[in-house]
Structure formats: structure tokens, C-alpha cells
Image (cartoon, rainbow, N blue to C red; front, side):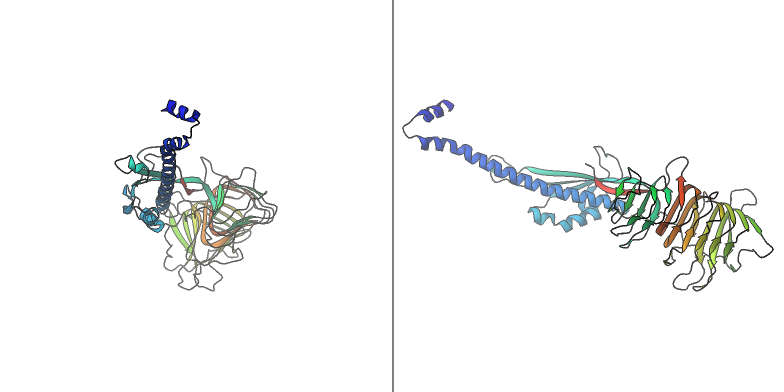
Length: 441
């Protein structure tokens, strides 16, 4: 054949038509194959997009504690909902087969319960190749998405509005030893203003986190992250004991109050209840193994607060801010720990309030003006979590406290004045894990 074509090429007697006719099958075949390749690639991309979308939907479903099971995609609500909304059948002109593996059975993420693999396949006839094949080829696309941990956060703002959830003002020096995160959706969801010096990583928000020179070099910024769940959402609302109508028993003559919540030394905890807990300058309160309920009696009352100006030492204790009133807004009190106060507080290791130093009833309304202020002198220490999910918390002044595994969860957080926080967590990183959903295979 090649020799024949060579002879035709050299022949000057007008054989162009014969040459063209001999080349035509090659030209048509190349065009047909190119057309099929383009069509195949387009279908493959559409299937891959559907697989990616389904896998991501399944992983987001896992993040939201929904059920994702191995089998048909239609049996897993997050995935079937996504594929329905994507209108895959109409876009592809075919009904694909869709299967789920949760967890995947092979690959890097095999047996990982945080991962979801989606495989989408379909048969389509190719216009040119169909002349040479007995059946339509199968096009397959596979995607794996997983819930991956992105860091640990010990400062969390639950504010979910389009505003700033965590801000810095003044000249605070903050070394957290972990990350911070807010659910706020603002364009400056975390605002590192003033002349602050901040060591915290990662720094994450549902909104945008602008880069800031006040964060130390190497800080990881995670804008547009999934919302952080409330780590203490399962802690039930407190109930106020009957006949809780007495203030902490300080008077002009009493300068020291001591309450032992575990007199038998068995590790048990006792509950005490006051309508106000005020330790003035020069006064001392000591306690251990206590749940201290502070009960605000009415909406407009000025009592029901935790106010410390003097000395408070409480080991394995939780202060619970609540009310037995049914008024609206819910009238739980506020916390004020003066910068000259000397406090040594640690949380219980077991029971309802394990890990919590201060717990405010989540039914409380936002208060504005940073109504909760956490300070303390340079010899003070806090070990445990401060939880005020509905109100603002401010760390203000030149506290310089020792904080071991300090965690703060509030509606909004502010570090102001000349606050100095140097957080450490002996035995490992503190804080709550944060997660994102990513395509991993």
C-alpha cells in the first residue's frame, strides 16, 4: 500500500483524485475519533462533577451527624438530595448508576469512618466508535471526600451574625497555645486591632479573616470555614434548688468564708446556691468540690452576679449563672473579676460540669457593652473552661494570669487593655477540634 502511494505521488499524470480517495478513510476516521474523544471527555467531566458533589454532600452530612450508609446513593439522604438538586439525569441525558462506600473499602482512606466515596457510572453510545463495538462503553467517575481536622480551638465565639466575633483592642499580649474560631460571618470576623501581640493558630471564621501583622509569623488563616459546634451543647440547663434566697454570707464582721463540698473525702461534689456571690476587697472565700449556683431572682434585679474584688480559691468548682425567674429576657447574672482580685480556680474532673469553671445558662440574652469581664492579678490562675454562649466576654486589664488549658466559649470575645494571657496545657494541646470537608481522592 505504501509503495503504491509513493508511486502515485511521483506520478505526474493527474492521480490526485486517487490519492485523495485513498486518504479519505484516514481523514474521516481521525475526525470521528476526535469527535468521540471530545464527547467522552465531556461526559466524563459531568460524571466526575456529580461524583465530587455527591461525595462532598456525604461528608458534610457526616459533619452534621446525618446517616450515610454503604449502598445505593438513593439510600443516603445527603447524597440523594444533592444529586437530585444537581439534576444529573437531565444534564447527562442518561440515568447513571450511583453507589456509596461509607467508609471506603480501599485506598488511602479505607475503613476511615470520616470518609465517603461515591462512584457514578453510565453507558453511552459514541457516534463513530459504535460502528466498531458491539456494546456502549461504560464511563466511570469516583470521588472520595472526608471530614478532616484542621486544628484545635480554645477560644470560640458562637456569634453567627455578619459582624466581628473576636476582637483585640489596646495592647494585649495573648499566647494561647492553640487556635481561635468564630462563627461570625463579617468581612472582619476576627479583628486584631490595637497594638496586640497574638500567638494563636489556626485562626478561623465562617466569614473572612484578614491577615494581620499582630499575629505571629506562621499563623494559619482559615476564612470561610464550616461553623464550629457548641462544645457544651449537651450540658443541660441548670435547675435552682428550692429556697435559694440568701447572698454569700459576708457582712461587716465576716472577712472569710470557707465551704467544703466533700467533707468525707470521697470525691463527691456538693451544690450550694446563693442569690449573689460578691467577694469584696480584703475578703476571702475558699472552697472545694462545689457546684455554686448563683440565682438572679428577677429580670430587673441587680443581684445574681459573680463579683470578685478580693481573694477566691476554689478547687474542682463550677460557678453556675442562672435564674429561677421565668421573666423575659432571661435574667441570669454577669461576671466581674476585678484586675486586683486574686483567684485560683480549677474545674471538676467529673460530673455534669466536668471541665467547666464558669457556666452561664444558655437561655440568657446578649447583654452588650462587654458585661462579663474576666481579670485577676499576676498571681491568679484559672484551669478549665468559661462558657457563656449567649453573652459577651472581655478579658481586660493587666491581668497576667496563669492559665492552664483555659478555654473560653462565648457569644463574642474581646481581649482589651494590657491583658497578658499565656495559656499552657500540660500533657498535650488544649481546645476543641475543628473540622473541614475536603475532596481527598
